[in-house]
Length: 334
Ligand code: CP
Image: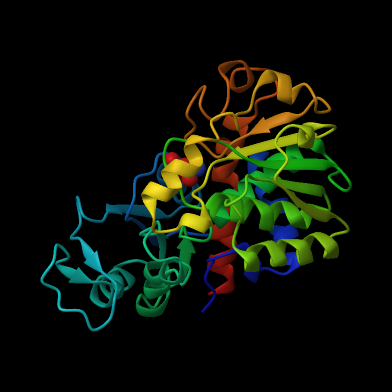
């Protein structure tokens, strides 16, 4: 069975075909690929864009979305095997996913990391439990390591904005945020942008390294696409000559599971913010962020509201990218 858990599973040709199809959907292409089917959308965590763009994408393909918020309008769910379930969870993923797979033809799952033990989180236990026990194709709607739907929309947006991407300079910069956020978006952005043949720069403070396997995979993909990935802890000079600025905050891997140490580390990093002065060092750079974003914390109003901000186009592209992913998954599993 074919799932969509990470863009890492895609060949270069499949990635390219999905982007091309996403562009066709943006230009108004029609498809009834999900006619007569139901797609369950299971959220263990909050969402605005993912939830609504998936519901609309499923409907546009002729399918019916069924959305559940686990722990509020659906039972809290356990995923670990062998545990004594005397806590808040009333249901195990073995049954929960299995039952949903009997009702639905495809499932989307959002499950953030617990943030206690990186070795546990990086195994993506909830997402993998759904892939194992549901018996139907599963789409990752953001897991501890990956947000592949966001990655496809981001790549679509860069192509939409720049046209030919080979050799263009793209910056992914860490940004301050009051909370330690998951790493799924920066990981996914690296893995997606690395396929575009761009000169990709990852700028993050010391301690905020991304998963070494993800960085190695991005380096390999960048080399294969004719681009390159550079990693630096430089905050300002990295804006020089860039054409895309992608800002995102994430928690320090060095302090994973130690919130007080992480808080102390990030408290000194408030000036990692996207400002007009920094953007001005770029080459008419566009500003991207997956949203939601904290104004004047991650990015200044002047940048976010400026003419080079493409955050709404980026969010809109979620719909088209997901139409392409859903259509492809339906055909692969027919
Ligand atoms: N970018 C994104 O995934 O947004 P939501 O968390 O609102 O779904």
